[in-house]
Length: 389
Image (cartoon, rainbow, N blue to C red; front, side):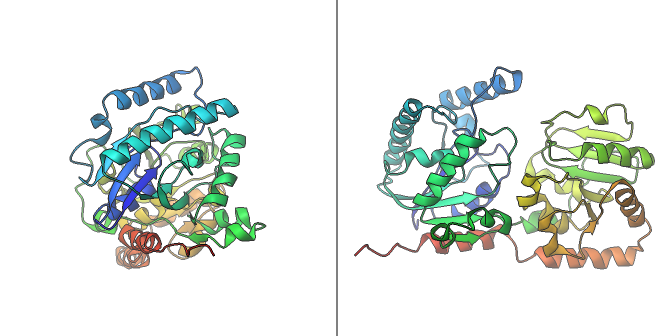
């Protein structure tokens, strides 16, 4: 093992985040302690949050259930600590510092980690800094937390500002995220842009079509969280304009979809494991990114964009900044008629041209593997801060 890494991020295996992809690569040569999410907002009295609290309690009582042996590298250990999510009061923040430091410190000692590098993907984990034997602190900023739905923005942004001051390295998923600190030169000097990657072999290797694919063709497909960043009005109107198309959504529904109710050619499939996604994206007609314009999307660098390109099917998207890098490989459509026309035009493309386009798409993301992203992080972690004079 080269070093120890303590990761503060979302729950292990809850969804295939950048942190999880990178850590899987790093785990080949490093020992990892993964600390499940300590939250970005206080829970509310609703069914969704109560269910989430129940899941967290189960993971604390039965930690092995969080790891799902067989899907977790042997060098990765997962813990689910108790903590108050995004507390605002100074007293609760002090309690969190004590609780988290004790729980994480105990887990480190059990693993023989006398020192470690820290990877923080959640700003609220800033509370443990200074209380644990971390050599270097990396803040991985994959989202604009000030625009992220369902977050206690004021508290999380305050934590983030403390974190960027204390971190040794800051990695951002897009230039837009880097621009958040354009007036703080001391912070900018620590920032490097680390775009999302892609599991290239997984999405290029021919996959068996999923049994959940509808028989009616053509199919416009999307996978991922069905959340507030999707343009529900656009989707409803396009689906009605193209009744001969099936619009398939694979993922967890996390927002109001009543705008789509009663539209017969819109279908939903529950979220599937990440390795099952090529069984959809390689076989539907077009991959969609039907985002609405908002601050979160302006700053995003979606994982599924590179996965769609590696899968080799045409991609139709509403415009957002991260598409500029792939100009010519993604059809950008602004508005209902343009989006519908782009889908229809994909049916007129000769098969020979589709094959060439697919080859270009895959060439464009071949060098953007998670292995390459992890190599950059590994080199970053081998650096040591110069001793103070």
